Image 1: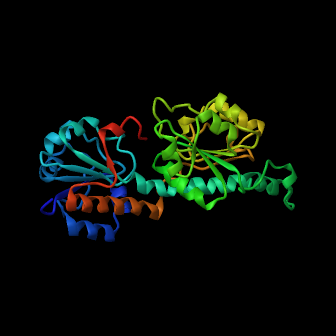
Image 2: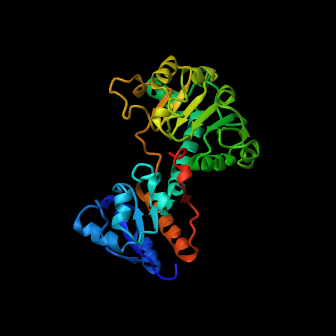
Image 3: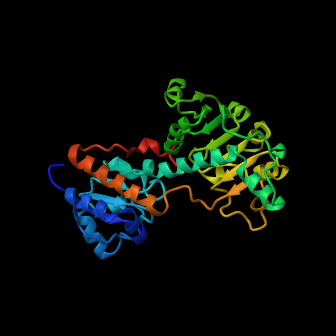
Length: 335
């Protein structure tokens, strides 16, 4: 662009405050003219319509109002939408792409803490941490590894389901471990898998061979329940299931049966339904660690999303491109 674009925020106030630090706002002011410092929470009021009429780039985030054809009518100058969060599918009508709107997402920034969390779960899981914690709580005595499934991360096999942004970051982080990595993703070739440091296999083989199965696939009609009774039965005794993606990827009753039996371990940051019923046995099993959907950006990690959004806008102003562009063809396979 040959001048500073006019920019508006569309998100809830909490997201605006946490994602855009004073430093990020200063960087934004250097490359763009902010139409109004307050974020738009809805887009139908006279005030919002007045702002949209002047807006060329919309900065969205968690709590963004629906962006659809009505929005484009109210914002005839709008050229781009930069999302300071992960998925855009929850609020963006894909029809806007037909009218030339360019879209960018900070999903790659949100992928960082999720992948870090998945790696931590993998390491803690392989060390049988939850089982040792329960053992210590019950016995108040020294550890007894003899009653544990196989322990340790040395030369085990980790199966990664889905080469999403999180999956790719997790694959990168796995390089710190001495492990074999398997990858299942129907959209990747063998060569692409090797470039990511993994061996491509189908889901069944991955379940059979892996000591850890870590889920990083998006939730779609095709992936819902992809880890069911059959896939769980293929896993060897002591396999650790890590889910930081979406709970509905897994058949919860089938997984519950396997975990109650003690045959598998699980680190579950997401479940289905979320939260689980109060009487779910998963709350009390020594081989299960439940966390309340905390893997994604929280606290100071949220500012990483705003920083990436501002960097994307700077790139768009400089040469009209995005490093993290979302295209209409992506909608069927992104989370």
